[in-house]
Image: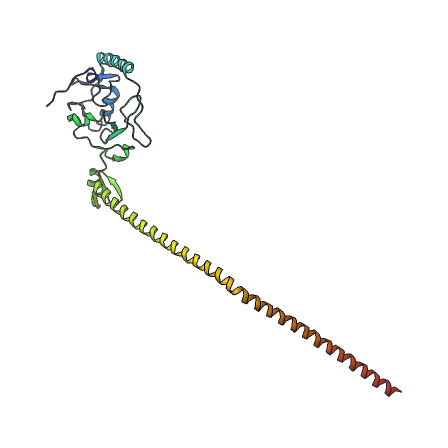
Length: 287
């Protein structure tokens, strides 16, 4: 096995966050960590009642007191000032939609992995400890993602790696042994694969329906264009006949009206003659 190269950077780096020690403290086994880092680790072990070193896994009961490591604090401070002076300015590697590394200080780099045990996301440099250190062997690394707490069971603080099809929710293995004991369950990975297959099939059917709608719309448009052309052609063909028919109709109407007026005049004239003749007869009888 290749030997680890010891550098000032390695000597004053926190084994948890892999950054320069901030407020370094020593625990009984001799290892040193950032005060916040070791407190966060041990806060997660409060329920067990025993506390372990993240580096060597030595356990302590009760929770040890933390003593400041003054020498490492001064060394880390000196190295930090040197890095700030020597390091050229670099642009942030985090783009829109990327997950930031939770360990980077100052400018953030893009996270490549998230740990479901640490509940932190790490960039390419800071995730190396999880690959190399035996202390992180049992940690679960996934693709970098936000809202890591949502992947942990709120009741048992275990990874939500089982899907309950009865309740349609993700649960941990302790949930399966308790309130979900008689439910139908599968691994979250298997359920995700099944959902992806269903999604692909749904998308395929939707695409087919969309293509059919486009085809129907195109055919309807062609029919409407043909109908419009037919009406246009028929309009020119029918117009002369319509004009003739309209003229004949108007002529007939005029003749009918003149005939009616003529008949009315004749009747009126005849009535006048009859009244005149009737008047003359009456006058003769009187004489």
